[in-house]
Structure formats: C-alpha cells, structure tokens
Image (cartoon, rainbow, N blue to C red; front, side, top):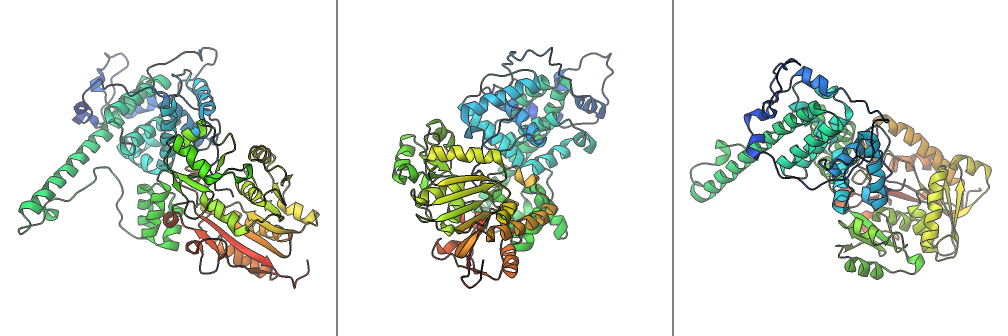
Length: 590
C-alpha cells in the first residue's frame, strides 16, 4: 500500500477566506459571565426581539437551530457573492462535511493548487447557495491546516463541544454542517491560536449565512463559553508562573508553591485514572484516536510509547521529494531549485535521492517541479522499501498491487533503461494515472501496466521473474500523520479481513518468483500481526522460501532482530513501514 502523499480529490464543499475582520466587541465581552450557556426558556415568537448581547440557549432554541433550511436550486443565484463570509472557513466547512459523508479525503488541498481551489469553490456554491471571494495562496494553506487538523482532532473537539452544550442530545442531534462550523472554531482557537474574537465573529457569520440566524446564535454562545474557559486557563497559568518566580527568588527555604497552587487546565477533559480500559478511553479523547488503536498500541509498546506515537500522528506532516534520475536530474539540481524558491529543506540521511521539506509544498507545486518531472513526492520509508528490493539494470520485476505507483516509478528509474517492471493492479483508473506518471518521468520504456487481480493472474499465467514486490493492502497505521482521516475509517474488525487478504496475495505473489529469485513483502503498517506474523505464517506454508536479511540494503538503524526492515515514525521521523526480503530456494521445483 503506497505510503506516499495522495492527491486532494475535488470536494463538494469549499470556499475561500477573507482576512480576519476587526472585532466588533472587546474581548472582555466574550469572556464575561454571559459566555456560559444557561438554561433559560425562550421567548414566544410574538415577543419583542431579543438584544444580541442577551442571547440565551434553551433546548427549544437548539432544536430550531438543528432544522436545516432547504436549498431550492431554482432560487439560488450561484453568482451571488457573500463578501462577509470568511472564504477559508466556508471551504473548510463544506469539505469537512463531504469527508464525513464519504465523498472526499483529508489530503492536501494545495497538492493540486489553483485548480483544486476552483473545484472547492464550486462545491461551496452548490452546497451553501453562495460563493465568497476566490481563495488566495494563504487561504489554501489555511484550508489545508484547518481541514487536516479538524479531522485529526475530531474526537478531542467533539468531546469539548458536547461538554459545553446544555444537553448531550443538543450535540448528538446537531445538524452536520453546524457541527463542522463548531469544530473549525474550536480548532482555530485551541490549536491554531487565532485571535478568539475574530474566530467567534467569522464563524458566527458563516453559520448565519449558510444556515440561519439561530444557528449563528448557537455558535456564538458555545464559542464564547470556550473563550471564557481559555481566558480563565490563561490566568491560572500566569498566576502559576508568578508564584514560581517568587518561590525561586524569595521563598526557597520556606515552602513550595506546588503545595499552595496546583496548575490545572480549565477545559473539561478526562483524567488518566481507573483501570486500563478507562485510561485508554481518556487517552483516546486527549490525543484524538480510536480507543481500539490506543489499547492495541499500549499492549504492544506500552502507554508512554503509544502517547509519543499519537503525538506524532497529530503533528504537521513532513514530506519528502525524490529527484527523478531517469530524466538526468541529480539531488543537487533539486536543491538548487529549492534554494532559488527559498523553500527550507534538509538532505535525507538515509536516501541519496531524497530531500525533506517541512513547509513550502505549495511553492514547489506552483513552480512546476512536479509537473516538469524534476521530482516526485515520496516518503523516505517507501524509498527504503525499494532499496530492500534492490532493483538493478536488467532485472525483470513485478510490482503487485502497484498503484498509485510510487515504488514502481522509483524501481523503473533504478533500471536505467534496461529491464522491465510489470505493474499489476486491480484498479484500472489508478493504472491510468500510473501510465501518465511514467510518461512524465520518462520511464515508459521499462514499465508495463497490467489490469488484473493478482490472485487470478498468478493462476492463469506461467510467469517467473527475478524479483517480486508485494506492497500489500493494510491498515495504514504507519501513515496516520499524512492520512488524517484514515484513523476514523478503520475498525478493529478490518484487521482480520486484511490479514486474510494479505495471506492470499502473498501466496499468489510467490508463484511469480523464479528459483533463486526474491520476494519482498511490505506494508505501511506498524502492527506486528500484519507484518512479522504474516511472514511467519507464509514461511510455514512455503518452506521453499527463507528470510534474506536486509543488512546490505538499508542502514542498520532500520533492521530488526529478525533481519526485516522497519521504520518507526517516532524514532525515524518518517512514515512507519515494514519489509521482509525472502529468497526462493533453488532446491525446490516450481
């Protein structure tokens, strides 16, 4: 399963973002006692209009805010421009809605640049009934941050939103678009550190324009309560810092401030107490992961390492660029272009053709480095799997489950025009994309694409080659930093189905290896049951294969005790992946 960056598919929900407007009210009003959400019965419809500053939320008001306003396509003027609504928030809200409904992925919007921004705006028009100003480059970066971050921190954000609502039912029955707007507001305040007054004002405007005034009132009250908690939390931290300073300078011989004052987070988050199950549930909220993942990782690596792994998954992803040597480029050429573009970079310490960048991906795309075939986006862990295969000029190689083709293209470039790489995949559309990439990177002379189910292909064709790579479908737990939505799309039950599929594919791939040939099994998973245990089960069924240690192919820091390749996301600061190199004995007949 390819661990490299996947493109941002067009989404039906998008918009662009205006600059943060100045506050209409001082911050003190947001942190006043009115920021709470008291249970006050609403005024009858016939009563006088309530002043904006006196808004209260009751169950009936919340119920009205949940009723969606139907969009009559005949009455919508899609050319209508709403200049008051923040473009990046409108785009983010619609995109998040589409992700939750299964119509999009939480990949980078800036991977397709301006065209993707136009697609997102068209979805905003169709969904919300209006458009905002066009997305600029800063907006696109903000959409990427807000969408990816809101998806990563979904469980954390939802816990806080539900805690600040009057009733649990207010949260559970909340209409999807309203929930996305609240998630955006909470994420911008808590994780991006945006000015609270601007976040409240802009998200209220979006809720009123996209839904109705009642929805804006609800967003206003909930966000104001969050702001009041953050202000209180800030005051506690300041007081703690002052007491600590006084302690060190004046009171070291008398008392400790830790007995007088205990620092406490005002946000209503769970505490780590109780049995293992209770602690796993608390960690799942605090670090925003599925409970089953937390329990599984705690079981395999311990709680401390599991927390480090979750922190890595929630961090901003780092991307790697692989220079395209098949077109005659060298890493120094890529470095020179990055320096000209003023994009910060660092050379890979384990792969000669790779460069890491933490920021500036949009600049790289707009400069045409990918479009011109100078480089490709590929994680170093995927490159190290290719190193385990060890492609050499003249080799005949089969890449099973090849699409989207990052490893195929790297192996093809290593052949230097001599040999073949047959790319087999069951997805015809993804193979078409691979063909286009082969043209771009100038490796069409060595790559052959084959649309087939590997299991059926191996049975029907008597093909034997030097090297076979099976980059198997897996849970993807090693790439959760880049695939923000993947953690919510996996269930524990999926592992059993995946393990069965991996066994079938391994059996099929082994039929394509000639005596003395090499079979490499790889995943982008960090789960032992998908990695070492699958290899062990395969070797029991196929005694004609033995483990060939990967010591000659990757740095020692990546080699396990059993001679396999493994990249640890926390330790190696790259995607997690696994690879086993197996050799077919000459003593067994085909």
